Image (tube, rainbow, N blue to C red; front, side, top):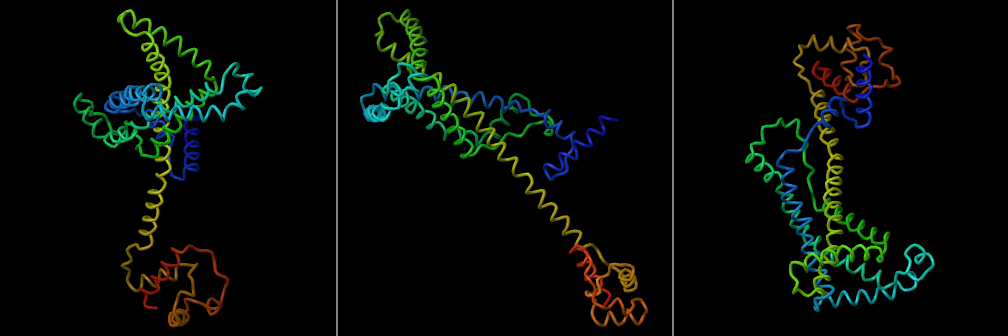
Length: 342
């Protein structure tokens, strides 16, 4: 009994919060819904290769071009490092920075910032491809479900996928990049370089065992870049995926109230114009039986006829303070009086 009462109270709370009649059982069912097999495979086949492997490869290319390419990107990178080094010289040498990020130089901060920016080019170029696949998510996931005979589930038990837009994907990317710069700023270039060099050197040593004749300097440089790139690609890819879906879902949840309002208006419209195939006597009786009849809605002839038939007193014809009533009631009475021939 207490459980039933609790559910009733929960239903009232949900209705008050959303403005739509909802029940606790409906929300429990929503929590029990699950994604389709096809959508899970879609994420593994599309998001994983694009946002992790694809971005990692493109970012590694741009990072190497920025450092060793000898072309336009390296010139722009060198100019940016020089500019930032000059601007950061004073703040980096401050007591605050040297307390928390000891022995770091302005050039280290500038180089790290420019390198992260170069790495971000790969992820940014992948966004249009990701959006193209997201627009076809439904067809691709349905095909996968059909191919693996997974399309027999009850639609009521399936969680709808949020519709990804340019805005949601762009915001996801912006959030991931902001987090990347924030992590770099929090740990500082010296600590990140330390991790990068240790893991990069270990990887380079393993490669040199397989290819002893390779140039170790180049191998070490590539390994350091690959480690740095892999660390931040994993971070940005994951955050872009999660944050873009969260934003897309929250954006969709703001829209359901609109159709509800439209439905409510339609219902009111139906109530405004019910079937009224009354006879004249029935219509006359309906007017007389309504104690809250609005006298002002009747014509002068109608008022005189009602007084003559002793259905109204002369006192009723005197101006009175209008009573509170809905627009719908007035409309119904007006129509009824018109049909009675008044």
